[in-house]
Length: 206
Image 1 (cartoon, rainbow, N blue to C red):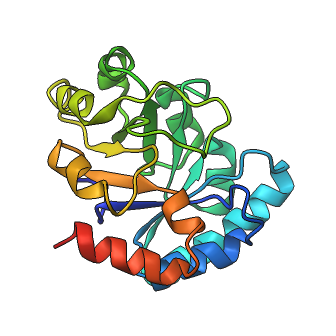
Image 2: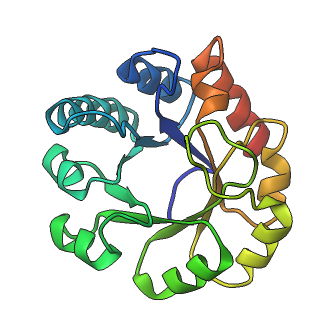
């Protein structure tokens, strides 16, 4: 597994109004060692400023920091990598923007997309949504663990499962073949983000 943890924590305030920097700090304090910053509606300058701050938080803890969608911002802030969606830059183009050796992840939402992505050169592939999710206004169809098991047979590239994953469902997702679970709402909506992160980590990294 190219990522150092089975928890892939995504910093996105969603509808909570919480400060993304405070969220990142709480996740890292709870033990998260992979952070992705996802601020889709944020202007580029503000996104760069936030990315620089989260990179500092991650670096101080020895955590990996990835910027969602924006290879240019990832390079400008010195992030460890970028995570791309189906409508973003191709993997090869993102690598041309990033410094050598940076991580590139790529999202897939079906077995067909996963198969197409196998040869992309991505360091890891996301697959989902596994469950109903509220983190996207127009989410793709729910896939479930059976399709994750099938997806696991299609590639040896590390798989990060995403979409509606909670502490209750994470063990089943990992058992179905995911190398890591990406979690957003179950962390950022928790009353105590640091505690929720620590408890989830304890559960999935036994």
